[in-house]
Length: 150
Image (tube, rainbow, N blue to C red; front, side, top):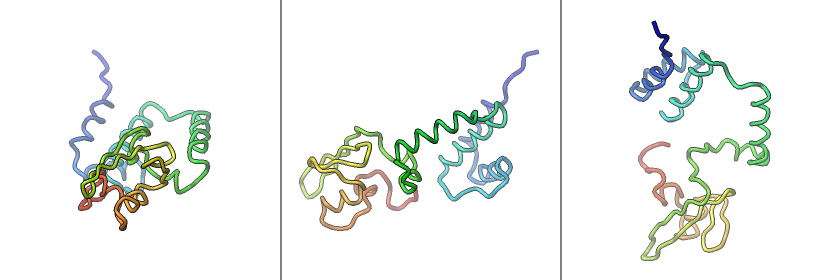
């Protein structure tokens, strides 16, 4: 008789689980109410927790090293550290948007964005510079549908 690891099947089942089922699993695994984040976040955290409970978590020294690396990346800026990495395009990505007949090319940098050789800390400030009006930069560049929540 072979021992089949049930963990990969549990992880695969997360994709087909309803939002209600994911929230139920969250309550069971974390013993708390699920946060109001998107499905992808819930799936990834639940998947990690399932594996953590089955195989063990990170060693304390690994956690400390990751925290130090995070501090180096965000300079201890609490606001910056809360920006979810999966929302931010990868540095080097080029965002292209036509506005009033002109094509605008924006490059994602490690510290924000660059347009016409000038750095911008936020994509919304950049969209405002291009249009002259207030815009949600994520919507302006088509990175987020304005009718849905991230």
